Image (spheres, rainbow, N blue to C red):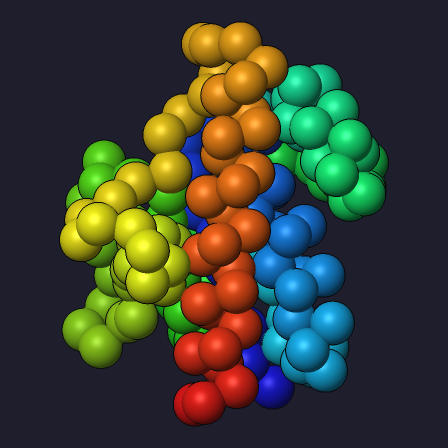
Length: 153
């Protein structure tokens, strides 16, 4: 069984949205045996539900993120995860600093063939509702690419 972890800063916006989307994308492709979870590089939101705007954006598009509770990434997880997908370069650096040799840590949008090289999922936290919709579109496109990658490997 493969395991994928999605990582952002606080685990209340981008990475939990990506977790919900990737889980459904994989199930729709018959890859329900892939385990998906998410975490933040920081722990200040640990135990909290997803940001209300993220939840509402997911719900508006037919997703359910109500079960999510934030947690902080644990370096011990490298031994249990096959692929770590981060939302931006800051979190990429933070996770790679913790990573053992050979850990597969990448930007999520590197799986979107339409995204420019090095493209990030921007943090919508300090913006308006449109930022969450934009993030959802980016995440959906990247998750299709992740699913294809997992099918092929």
